[in-house]
Amino acid sequence: MKKLAFALLSLSLLAAPALAERGNKPCSGKKGGVSHCSNGKFVCNDGSISKSKKVCSK
Image 1 (cartoon, rainbow, N blue to C red):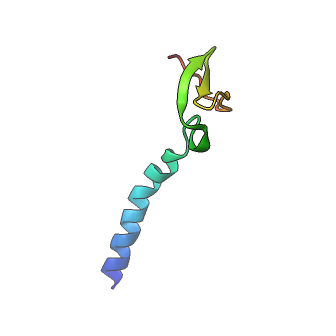
Image 2 (cartoon, rainbow, N blue to C red):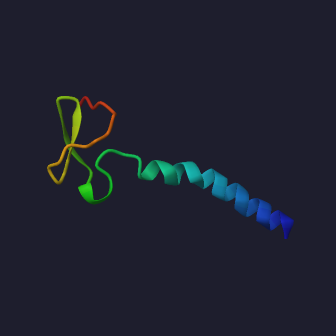
């Protein structure tokens, strides 16, 4: 039983960074993703400007 608990804990620790990174992108969620870059800011597919501190250069 301890081996199973250890294995599940190990897998969850390995998956945590990938899950945390998923929602940490400009224009994620209802914004629909990044449409393009304008003056170093991300423009979302819904037309709004992302509040991200990252600078884009596309």
